[in-house]
Image 1: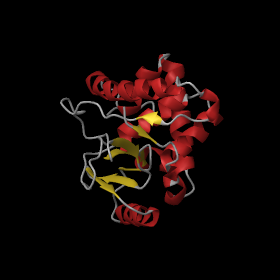
Image 2: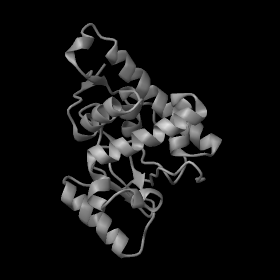
Image 3: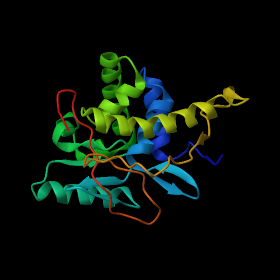
Image 4: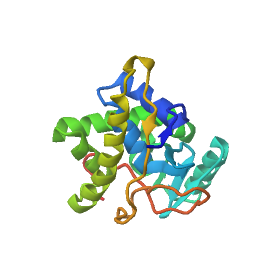
Length: 211
């Protein structure tokens, strides 16, 4: 199975957020893969400089380019857009950050997502269910998101069970799930393909918001 390094910005931030909360590393990594993952050399890598606005996803090579786009989107009067490794929605969560820059920063983005997932887990009692609710409160949409999440988490936990767990964070197995049943909604970032910038939307909604 193809392996990918855990040294990318999103994976490193997920590791630190897991250490600071009760959310397992495998849960955070799997959410990031579903939200902003793109296939690179046969692996699925989440990416921090991703912005989704108006139903179109944009993947940027540099942080400043992504931040400039997000600021332009906000200046144009659009408040419902999603940014960062975990696709936090500015409309619902922007007031929890001091700036767009902070909201997009991998560590702040990951820690906020982890705390949100922790609340969902406390409510629902299951990490897969929490992942589904992170995506949508609609049961059908949540179920399809959970299928992707469960695929990535099984791969992550399988890699964690290797022969040398003391060596540090695992090199994650990142084979992509079958694309036959894409998540059918306007509020998630599906898996990227290398070289493509347009995507359907992604969002993290608060606990009391519908999708």
